[in-house]
Image (cartoon, rainbow, N blue to C red; front, side, top):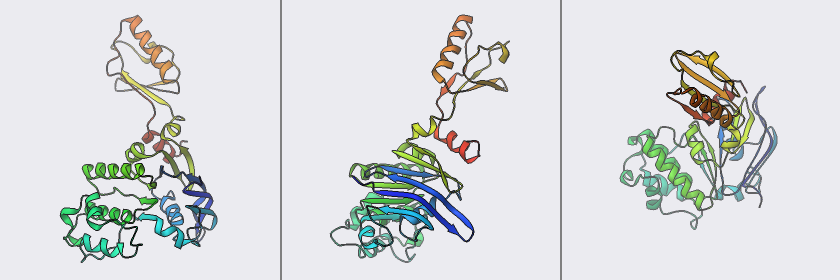
Length: 301
């Protein structure tokens, strides 16, 4: 089956500045694909081209098999979009705003307003003026507008910004439910835990380019794992056994960065057992998405 989104050689230029440079990726139907990157990395510019808000300077975009600009009439009814900021009139209520928005959609496609408000936990705020909603409640209203049309493809730009932890987890549950129903989701987020929890695959953008892509496990596999423990009393780093990796020590805490986590840990534990030494505070873990992201954002990879 043709991927839900196909992006190839994408470039977007503002004057002499290339915000997006030769970006390519596919989003398979029914998966959640996350775009990650620091501010200015090119995430929003890429999303706008996928949404059909502008034509790329170079490259091609296909959404649900169509050009999102030329074939807007075929693409737009099947796509839900949540921008970084919504634009509903502040004097409307959430119920009024959603009824207005639903009126722009094919009647057979729209969810009932009451059902949509319940999905995003805004039923109790249905009759409150939008200007009186909190920032997090406004974000949930924006999400409601994106899902009310029962889209095949959902494009979300920073959907949980401003949400409290409970609301964020509620949103994650809703996105998982939509995925189960076969909806494809393209997500841009600054919350790396969000990507780690939800994404089938991720792409990390840096300087307008995709610098890493794949599953979270595939992306972090290229970064060293870490073993940490308290330096045993009376010993120096020089007394520790040779392992795959390099030792460092700060305030009595030893850290090993290694590409062979199991081998290094086996060596350390065997040495400690033979010497009858306790490795207090032992902590061993694979690289995290946070570490991979920070390494890339810092220009070290």
